[in-house]
Image (tube, rainbow, N blue to C red; front, side):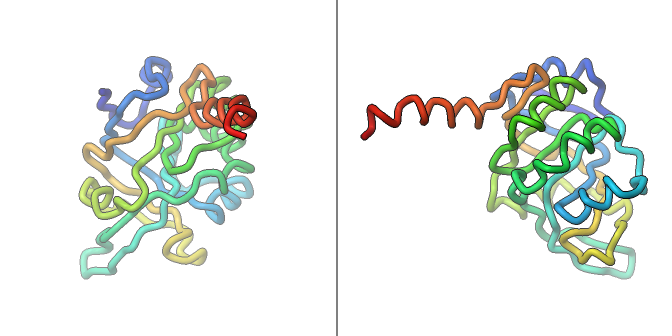
Length: 187
């Protein structure tokens, strides 16, 4: 088990391996499809070096003091496959969190730029929200609440399980290969 604090160093990421459990404290930024597209078109409103991008859109409530996150479960990461490698390269992101895995292009970018991908349990959005200490800021609300970029302070956000490590090992790809190999046996 690893407890990491943002900004996360390349050395910390290099120690992680597929199957490791991690918890994150510090700043975490949410970004889904529309936010990823905007990241490739413009400069991000926050420094992402050493940072964590969470593929999630919150259920958020506006309060007198700002915002409160009610629930923030992960969304399917494969939708960000077309963008993630470039985001990692351009902005120095060290950890991407979501669900369902990512592909070869992202795994190669993680190997080249010393980053990792971890999953958070789908359906556990209330658990994720409990780790949110405060909403630091929200950007790009014109994209909608779920697609906006939420900048959050989190404490012990997790448990997260590493599925792609900085060696490029991709657990989901290994499972697909194993399934292809065994299809003849099954049939």
